[in-house]
Image (cartoon, rainbow, N blue to C red; front, side, top):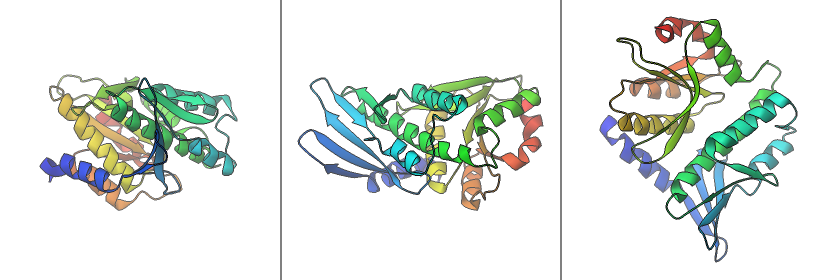
Amino acid sequence: MKNNFKDGYFKWLYDNTVQFKISDNITRLTLPYLDRNNTCSEVFIKSTEDGYIITDDGETLDELYLSNFNPFSSPKRAALFNRILTENGVKKVNDELVVSCSHEDIYQKIHLLTQCMIKISDLFFTAKSTVQSLFLEDVQSFLDDSEIRYSPSISFQGISGLTTNYDFVIPKYKDTPERIIKVVNNIDQSQANSILFLWNDTSQARSEYSSQLYVFIQDTNKKVPASVITSMNNYNVVPVKWSKRNDYVAALKK
């Protein structure tokens, strides 16, 4: 099954992606990456003389505003919003999320914009009263309090040429492999599939490293689908439910 994972993922992506020509120079691409409302991600590709401009047409922020959530309502949320943009090379232009690209890097830019849109949409969950601080900061505080050495915010280019962002990396020590951490505030099977594909892509490009991926999953007042846990275990990825985080201190602290 592992040997077919990459091919299977690309087939799933191809079969579930819809392309629609709006005008001579504008195309809408509907991708099977779901936001918090289980709505597929849509990007709009405009051809220019120099290449392309890709935008979400303002839909990501519009949806947050309609849900009475303002990602700029506090310095903390605004800082995280800007960090997500920077990590993915995206700009905010009149409430649209936008990237410019050439013919050579258009597919990479579509990928990064889509990642950015999902992360921005996910900011909604930071508004719930049960969440006292941003989950990313919670994980960072957990690492600090547990005296675990780490470096924040790192990116790797995979064998496909796609660049994937990870939230923390814990360096290799003696026989203990490098540990890479991905933080997910809200997860479903679609997002889990994406994480597994991108990790497979990343680890193949870094085959000289014996890296282990840990996915921290927020499960406060929410149930993590059993299929998500099973999928990650099948591909030797360690799912860390937030409620069980202390069980992993020893493995991360080595």
